View 1 (cartoon, rainbow, N blue to C red):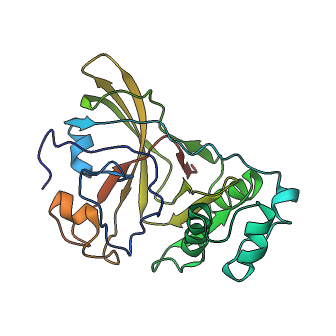
View 2: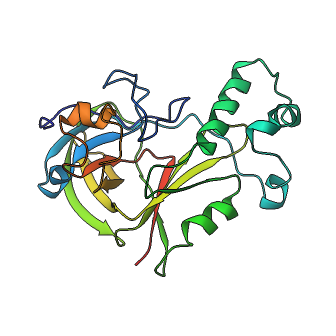
Length: 245
């Protein structure tokens, strides 16, 4: 189990988005880790966590839907894509773009519905297409601070057991990778840092991890096995979770 006060990070996305079916190659406390893994009881029991909130370096903005839909977004159209964005085919930027498209084209795990949105409108359409009404978007609100201990001062469950989590990808324009499952709980967690910093952090708990890669970082950090307990993580500021009542 995770130790009380163990340091975890809320960092900007790594160049390659890590999927639940993938292994994590980075060290557990690497600055490229994008999730703050913890057990569900850690926030329900109001424990202290050592966290590091950082600002995202990804400033790509959305294109209007009408414009975005005119630009190809598939591996077999990649030469046309790099030409459109004036990116050299063999550059680091081109390799990053190709990896983003690859991640978006990979199939989801069993029970997961996924979609990569290239416009704000398409993200909203996908995220609000499920059951329920009064869809709301929840994200982390925090200023950048040094790593420090935070005390959990309040926990509010958001919506039902269906949630859509959306992650910003590395691309010349905004591309948002969203995935929807029926085994995800969303929370809004209020915390206070040792220096007095107030944080409202979005967190999700995955109640069924039986299909995840056994070598996923979450299991290594928390010392648990797939499918045994819910796995939770905070969301960095450039991510959003959609829920409905």
